[in-house]
Length: 224
Image (tube, rainbow, N blue to C red):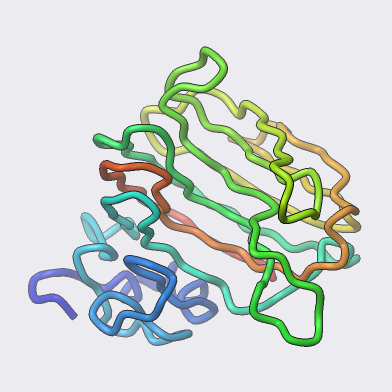
C-alpha cells in the first residue's frame, strides 16, 4: 500500500467486483509493487489504482501498451443462455493521450490448455481522439472474425464523450452482444463466430499510444 492513498476496497459498493478480480499494472505480468492477485484488495492502493474523493475507484496510467486494469476471474462463452453483464458508471480523462485508450473489454482467454485460444479481445470500448472525422467520441471496437492473422474489426460510434459520468452496460447472451450507453441500445450484434472461445471481462485504463489517461468508476458491477 502506498502511503497517503486510499483503498477502493474500503467502500462496500466496490467489494464484490474486487473480490472477483485481480489488478494488472503496469503490464499484464504480475508486478508485486502495483498488481494484485485475485481478491487481494484489502488495504491495497498505489499511484495507478486508488480511491478518489472517497467516492470513485480511479485507474491511472501512462505509456503505450501500459494498463491499470481489473481482470475478472471467471471465464464464459458468448453462447451461454444465461447473461454475462458488466455495468459501469464512468468518467473519462484522456489527459494527454495521443490517440486512444480502452476502458472496458471482453477478452478471449489465451491461457487455456484444453480449449481453443486466441490472444484477442472480442470487444474494446474505447475513447478515440479522432476517428472517421469525429473527435472525442466513444467507440465499440468489435472483432468480426476468429482468424488471429486477419485484421477484422467493426467500429461503432457510441457518441461524443460526455463531460461527466455516463452509464455503460454490456451484455452477452445466446451469442448476442448488446451495448447500452445511458440507457440507449447502441449495439445489437450476432457474435456466434466467437462461440468456441472462453472469455472474461476487463475494466480500467489501457493505453494504445503514448501519453496518460485516467478513468473514474462511480459504479462497477459484473455478472459473469
